[in-house]
Image (cartoon, rainbow, N blue to C red; front, side, top):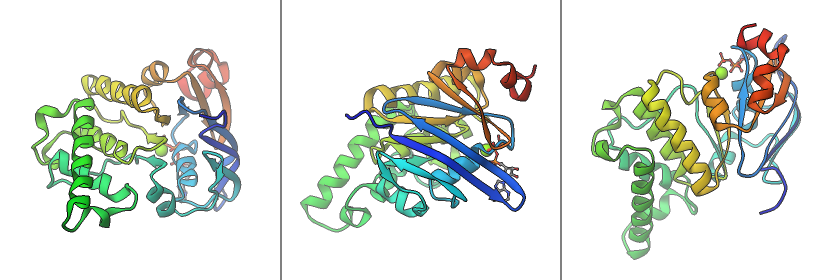
Length: 256
Ligand SMILES: Nc1ncnc2c1ncn2[C@@H]1O[C@H](COP(=O)(O)OP(=O)(O)OP(=O)(O)O)[C@@H](O)[C@H]1O
Ligand SMILES: [Mg+2]
C-alpha cells in the first residue's frame, strides 16, 4: 500500500452552455476511505461523477486514479478495467435472472481477461465460472440476500435491487466505488443493510468509497470526511461534525 490517494481530482470543471455544473473542484479519496459528497439538488454532484467516470468529458481539470492520469478516458475504458465502478441514481438489474446469475454476469463482464474466457468448454473456463459463483455466493450473504437468491431480480423490491446492484459491483474486486444516492427510495430496515454492506466491503475487501447521499445520518455514520458542493463549487470540507455545524452549509443545504 502506498500513500497516494486512490482518487485525486484537481480543478475539475464542466459547463453545459451557460450552466457551470462543476466549477473548479479539487477532491481526493484516500485509500481505504469512505468519503461523502453532499449538497443541494442541482449542485453538480452527479455531473462530478459523470466527469470522473468518463460519462462526460470535463471542460478542464485532471483525474488521477491510483496515481494514473485517466482524464478524458471513455466510460468503457474506465469501467472495463474494473478498478473504479459507479452506480447511477436509477437502479439497473437483469430482471429475468436470479441474483446469483446477475452477479456472475457482472463478474464475467469485468474480470480479466474478459467475458469470453468464461465461455466454451474445458477445465479452465469451468474453473473461472466456479470461482465467480463462489464469490457471488459470498457477496449474496454479505448483502443479506441469501433467502431470496433464487428469485428473479425483477420481482424483488427496489431496495433489494439496490443491494443486488451493489453486490454486482463488488464482483470484479474494484479498488474504488462511487455511489450516487444509494439510499434513495429504500425503507429504514434496508438502509441499515446497505450501510452494513458498504462497511463490510470497506473493511473486509479494502474497497474505498465516494458516496453521494442526501440522508445525512447515513453520511455521518459511514464517512470520516465529507465534501459539500453548492452551485458547482466546493463550499466546505471536513468531518461530519464540522460539516453539520458549518453555518454556510446549514444555510445552503441543511436548512438554517
Ligand atoms: N447533460 C446535461 N445537460 C445540460 N445540463 C445538465 C446536464 N447534466 C446536468 N446538467 C445541469 O447541471 C447542474 C448540476 O446537475 P447534477 O445532476 O449534477 O446535480 P446533483 O447535485 O446531482 O443534483 P441531485 O441532488 O438533484 O441529484 C444542473 O443545473 C443540471 O440541470
Ligand atoms: Mg444527482
